[in-house]
Image (cartoon, rainbow, N blue to C red; front, top):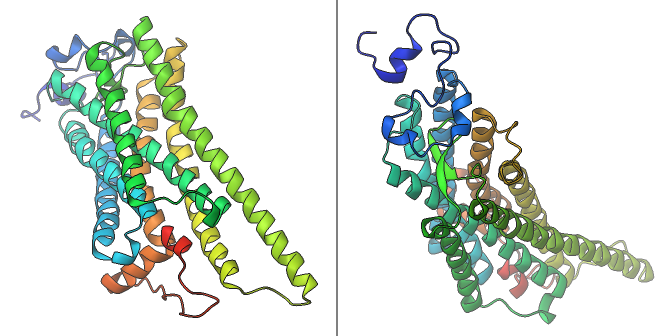
Length: 374
């Protein structure tokens, strides 16, 4: 006990409430050099129970392990297995790269802070860098998912009549995602918006508490351009996909009835079924993204509107955790649900016990150009 200092010693001393003396503010336990950049809003809250730092630290360790494993797997398989090196899958790899960078640049420092007193232990400057890295990768992942959904729409709804996604176009789409995310993330360094400690003050993110016109307009821009617009693209794309699938199935049933057969097993039908399977996987992935990012967008919007009553340390930290967890789901959904990735895993990683058979080389199930795009 004698070796404890700072907030840890305070947590174990005398008459305590949630591990700290009564009347202690979460601001009181922060390093002196950080107090000048912490919003006064957090000063009215007591420190959270130290147990929460341990729990969150362990959860971030799990997220980091899952993200590194899953995203590295997707990138490695793409480089190793030539059949999946398609323009569409290039966007998937861009998503994996963005997610991998997000967790590897944010998680280790958050984990360190959780297990070392539950305070931000790095410099003020790195607080901004930490937040900017999270912004770059988060925005890039969001827009990459929007691009993936638009590509799914083009393949399934337009087929061979739609514009073909080439490697050059895919590279330009990925580059656009990175450029727009970098421009948005450097804006706070130029005076529009800001970064700062948030929640339980072991991490840094966008400043959604300041009420100056620059911060409010920046955060509103973020909510609209980096949440609402991608969401509309995603929802619109998959609405059209589902409608096209229903129309196709109805046409197939009508044709089968005319021919007095149970079903039509043509190459085109099997191609469409392969796309439907992949679309279902992507829809599930998008639904997870919506669940993960909506709470954090809601917090940002509350800050813009000046409604601070619900913005408490834990209620703002947990949505941030949920948002970062999206980087763990993406690679596993695509690697496990995508037939081509499963075939690559069967060939190159048999110890995963993923047994995906290659399509038979006949007229009904031949690998087609459209399926390759998936």
